[in-house]
Length: 187
Image (cartoon, rainbow, N blue to C red; front, side):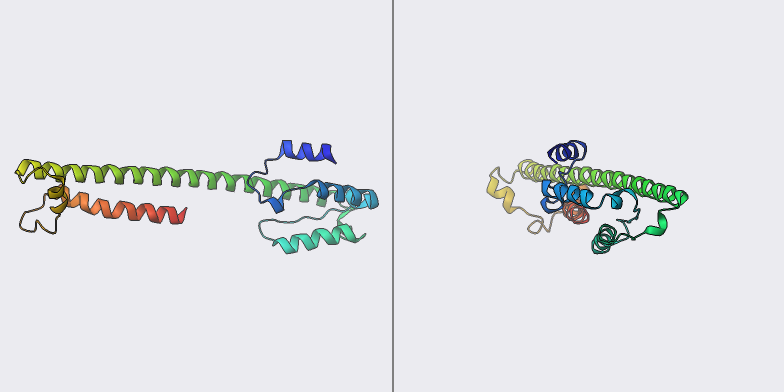
């Protein structure tokens, strides 16, 4: 059992699985006991399950019926064509799962890259907006104190006409963090 467990751990990455879903040494020992008690169940019975469409309860009950009943899926035993069909269906399902995993991985990578880009853009635009505000206060000679710069907000400078790029920056500083939040929610 320990050799089988080491082989399974070496061949299959179970890092993304919950601890209760991983194969344990006691599972392997139980399976080997079942093989010793009912070797014909592992040599003769063929039964297919579909993890994409079937629920976990249905799959477990179907597998348990195969292991406990001597005649479960017995009609499939005599047909090599049917066995070949089941194997092809299994590989087809495996291929679909691999393609779906690849697509999901690409989507997740694109989401992370776009979120990082939007966050960086938002930070750069905020820094530019603050620099423009400092520059505006220093050029117009209102003083040079930081308290003056912070007190001079667009709400207090209603009489002055706002430059179009400043309005665009103000809009971007509202829209970009909201879009980052939406993308993080979708992710």
